[in-house]
Image 1: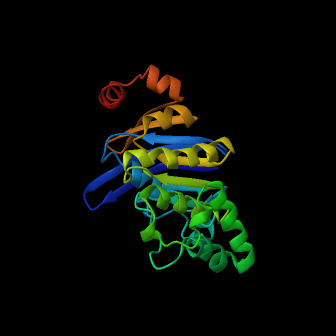
Image 2: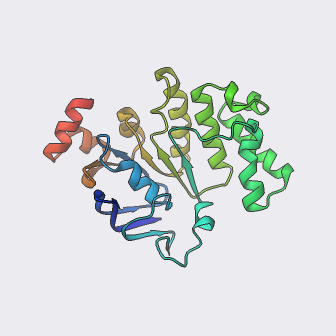
Length: 240
């Protein structure tokens, strides 16, 4: 589904990504872990061109998104993105936050968009919050709404950028539960996270990044149980 070849990203003299090569298959849950500043979020943001790669190619569903002629906005409709900071529109109700993109970008009728929104709200256990505003919600509720908003576009892949790092510890579980359910349903997901338990339980493959490189990648049992690279061992020794 996604193929990345020789991905580099520089911010002036700072070389953040140093030649990333990876393939992500349909239905796969790929979890990216590593220390802060290792390039994880930059890598994720390059996948839908929120960050412009300095060099390299990213192919999504057979189309090179790094090609200048590609309509990236059309492709982004197939890529759901969930950020650390929710990014909900504060002046819109929960229902309007979820229905705005399907109506504006897909030309969906108000009735159809609302039907999908209520189905999603029910699924994440927040159907009673349809008419609330983001300021009236907890962090965990906001993040679940952000996930529902992304799902309302029926994406082919979901990208999660540390979706629980801004949450109080007791709210982390409710967001991870929604993500686990998505994974169980076969949604293709790329997840940057510090939640090692989630990586172990849900990841089909775990990627360890450090200093802009993929240092090691493996199935969770192997990467956590028998890491091969000294840097991976050192990192896991500190976080587990």
